[in-house]
Amino acid sequence: MPSENIQWFPGHMAKTKRLIASNLPLVDMVVELVDARIPASSRNPQFESLLRQKPRLILLNKSDSADEKKTALWCGYYKNKGITALPTDCKNRKGLGEFTAKAKEVLKPQLERQVAKGMVGRPIRIMVVGVPNVGKSSFINRMAGSRKTKVEDRPGVTRGKQWIGLSNGFDLLDMPGVLWPKFENRKTGLHLAFVGSIKDQIMDIEGLAVELIGTLKGEYLSLLCKRYSLEEAALFNLAPHEILEAIARKRGMLLTGNEVDLERAAIMLLDEFRDGRLGRFTLEWPLDN
Image 1 (cartoon, helix red, strand yellow):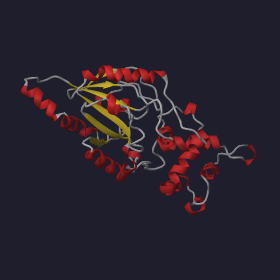
Image 2: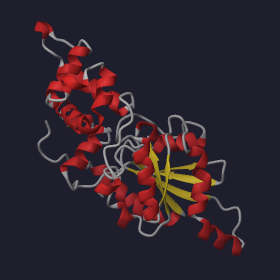
Image 3: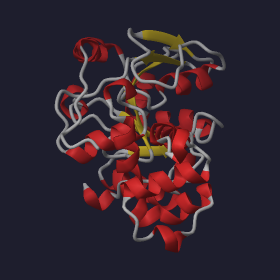
Image 4: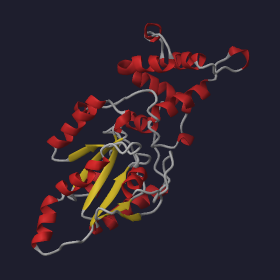
């Protein structure tokens, strides 16, 4: 089980920060994708100073895997801070039909000034940022209607900036995913690891799965039980590692001598959580921030 704070900041992420700063003058606004399941942990705190006063639209991506009521609360939270937030899910295009109107709403004062100056027909340039594996490339590919950027279900794939022109008069600038050198607390690192924003190769996968079960147990134990056909009353007093063992036995993940294959069960649990097969979870409340 991870006992210390998780940290992952490879060299290319420092380069990405410089890339964002140098290209910011080229764009009209910034679209920041966050994971709707962990809206606080998946927002890079350095963006506040790095992006300065540039107009911004937040996409609460992967919202079909998130708790719908909590997503609504998060949208209200951002609205109170003067930031427009839009729930999206790039797998099924949820929310993407509203993107153009929302972006133009954010840029309304700037667009009106351009029209007054006779500046008509210039593409709206938008920088797309976020932490690794939050869905930036999937968002751009859906908006472009083709596979313009490389998409993989692992962090650290996009390594350089890419301009993509859209038919709606937008030009999108895709930035590589970037974390920050030191996470504020242990929970932030764990939440990012749960959703796959930190490379599994540096993690103790079995320990991470146990941490995930411990996190879900309080509020979402019934969904775990439903997915793995377990009795909630029987699991209520079990420790998280015992629940992982129960899941492994239920799925027949056994080694010789009837010993459970906890590593295999851990990989399955994390994969199913990330894919949304466990149900809809949001691990953070706006009131926590």
